[in-house]
Image 1 (cartoon, protein in one colour):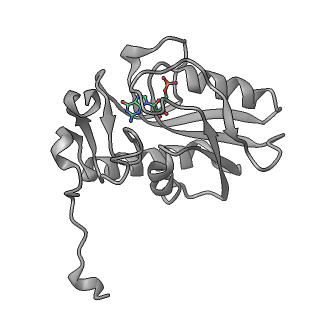
Image 2 (image 1 turned 60 degrees about the horizontal axis):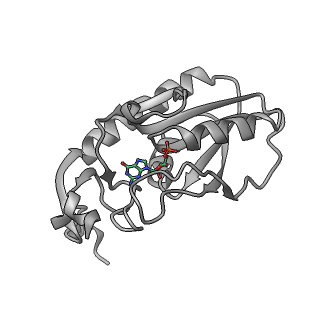
Image 3 (image 1 turned 90 degrees about the horizontal axis):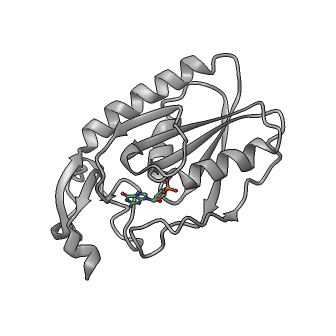
Length: 193
Ligand code: 5GP
């Protein structure tokens, strides 16, 4: 493949017709993720981090974020039950795939795609805290504080967004749209049909 003739484009044609508008461009995401990485690098100076990505939504964010964290770190993934094919939280959180090592005496940084009701995060923070880590903090790419059902505040937040169902950059609807290189608002008719 000729790499020079294969420049990345900011637009993915697949299913683009279902996007009402772009909320955050790829450029805006890149800039903010670099800032978050710098902040985290400063805050954790002299320590070693276990970065825990929540599958699957946080994968793209985490891949970019860890390259901006200039510290020794390891990473792992957790999978929890999510909305499935709905856009509403069921309120039920269950771990489907757990961390593969002991987290005792470890600084944990949970990486989330979005905090909505806060139910997932509250459950994860409590569950991980019971395992005696040195600390548990949370970085989320997006925060929708308007929809919070439980009192949980992310330690680092990329963007506070309005109460809209968003897709792209890892976030899905029905497993689709994760590969969009931006965050977009889905047209309501796309999830009504
Ligand atoms: P919470 O437990 O805070 O209500 O929900 C967290 C999870 O719900 C997120 O990790 C994400 O998977 C899903 N979620 C919440 N809001 C949205 C949204 O606007 N778009 C998408 N695609 N997923 C969302």
